[in-house]
Length: 193
Image 1 (spheres, rainbow, N blue to C red):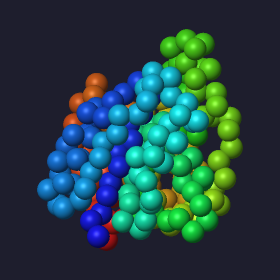
Image 2: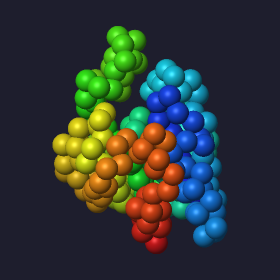
Image 3: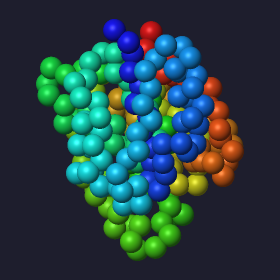
Image 4: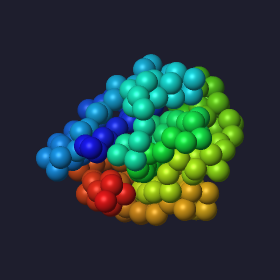
């Protein structure tokens, strides 16, 4: 069965942002079926919109299903896994600049704080998340202006995630000129082996 990879972008982003076009091309060249999703209302991401949307796009998950989420897309992956049925499994997940906390620099205004609030305050059942795969890789940059680097220890502790630290890549955004990310490609390939 062909391995499927779903790329989930972040807040105020789109499917052709960051390193997604490069990742899609590289993975498809290696035989993966890749879908870069256009998440609904990217300027106002909501848990109760994004998680069902992802679930609908994936359909029936299996061990040939792999997810890569960037920023709030990584949170979406975690919350998707949390709501799966007990017997449903995926092959693994890569969390790129995933966060559980945010720096004050993240918010442009009070509206941004309100949008982020449910994502920050709704607890995650880590046991449920981990029951659907034991293959997690979390990639962080040591100079991300929005994501506290200390969040990496939470992903390691709660998920047993392999932590990859990139240097000087910011929030892995276009303004950092992160158009290619070999560590993310390698992470997907490793968890898919």
